[in-house]
Length: 616
Image (tube, helix red, strand yellow):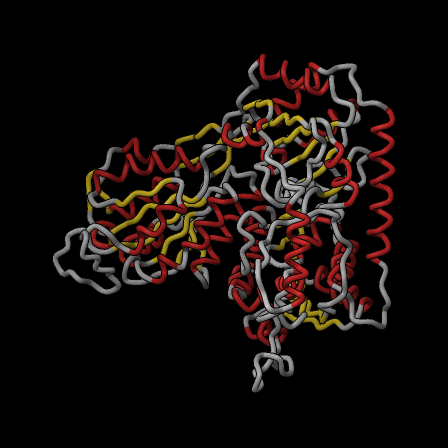
């Protein structure tokens, strides 16, 4: 079959399917793209010609469309994603941040940037890097460190092997992340005789590795000897669909369950075994149990510094770790007993092997008592004065109360993810979607778009601060154009409140964190007279302004009832405190300073750092 490289690529992607537990789905339900001279005549023409096989979606920002693909992939349990195509040049390099986010969060996305001419006849061409060391280097080489697979297709006959390698990585639960195929613009438009089998329907089975018998025995032995065990549920519990198995195991054994950011929703918030979020942004209940735990069972977690409170959380001198993970590199962290297996399969096997075993009754009662005290704290936080400017935590409470059991909250960088991790009461395994692997400002609206596209039956609440909104709000226009309804809660606190709080804690006096007009001495004048609500309206969204708690509640109800994307703009008090986690996060403080507040912060830092441990 004689097709161009672009046409062959599109037809191949349209024929790829994934399968797990007997359920098949299209791996690429569509392709996002922004076109320029580097891809319009190749992939652009192919998407036009084969639009029925591979639907095209127009994005407004290259980074944002990768975020949308990532949001879709996460909501789809990594069983499906979007392809993203751009021209060579700034269009391509704009995707690098999105690629880093996908790879760090281990989410499959396929990036198809155009590239300089493989033929080199007209060099140097527009947007060519011209590296004197080699004529085979372009700006697309910067994708290499943030891609799990990278290739440049310099000849048509290279395409089939590259496509199969790309799919191998995209459908591998361990190796998945961003995959980049750089496509020189002359090669995209070149015709070639392709074998028919390249375009045949191909199903990629997603495996569920079983635990080794001896590893399972070691894990059981560790738990049987434990008096104060704790489960740390990570994202792997969600992706493997292991929430029912986790609930059954926790109910029968009494082991309390704490959740990471990616694992939040592994149990409903009010499940008897749920003790809340763990780590630097965790609940006091989960962190108290973690400090005393003699065995920590990590399931599908990569043990980030937020989860371990920068290795200061697990303080029991004899603490042991049992790590269940599909990725061997994660299973070996903290020197624990390793069970390299799918989370669902491992939990089912562990449950069967430990039949009849339970934790001491005192441990179960202590976990429930600590959790009840924490829930009372959250209840108190969610109470508000109707006449006052609400705190961010109170906004979260109102949105939580107004959302339905299956609705999804989406957030990313700043202080809001920490408050959400501590306070949000999740009722469904897919109801919590916070990007905290890369903590990328600007992810929220684009990621929320992907979440909604993956499951249109759910209401999607995007929580975004004014600082993050200013970085990337363009995909509101995409949502409006596609008729994809979002509820965006725009929290206005006139600055980077998260880093402001952190800055103050390290003795840097909120330097450079407030959106203020410059005076003679610095950026400390009046708030910048921006109107982000008007900006959202200019992008095509409906806008509701809320002042105070009752207006916010009424605006949310109106937004939910509307079929259109609606932005709810609410002013908040950036200095209102939220409950702490009683845990630490390692942010180094200047060792010497002429400022007394910095010296005080350094003393506190030195004291806290003494709690750090190396678990070997």
